[in-house]
Image 1 (cartoon, one colour):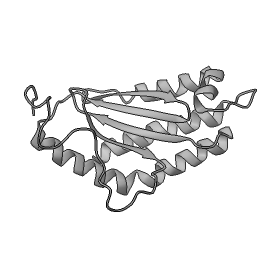
Image 2 (cartoon, rainbow, N blue to C red):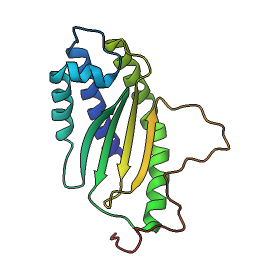
Image 3 (cartoon, rainbow, N blue to C red):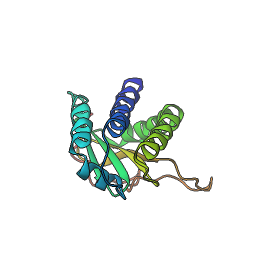
Image 4 (cartoon, one colour):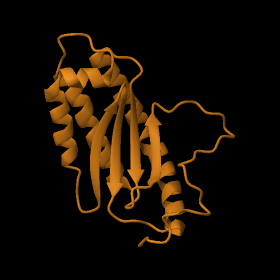
Length: 165
């Protein structure tokens, strides 16, 4: 888990650095615009993230308006009983170790680009492509009674039949 958080932070640092080192001649309205006007920034981000691809996972970055989406696709498909534990572990660990650095990264990107409303979403997918965990930074304040969901219930899942450990 510690190694994974380090990999994500390396990716975010690469994203922030790419934004800081490349400028746009016009004032872009979104991160997507910024990167379309700064191909070198986009190339720097993609090259730095490609180094995170390994035998355990593939990492990809996409952009939607002002959202930077970092998707980590695990190569192992975990069974239902293991998924529940993994989800809880990611939630606890990332909350403790990733929230502040990610929110600082968002603030740095906004400062470097002059674009407000930037967010970074980190998604971790099971080997079969189903989402295991995700969070969007900065984290929006939610009522305490609200539970985070990932779109599938713990009790039943169509992907249980073909999973390995």
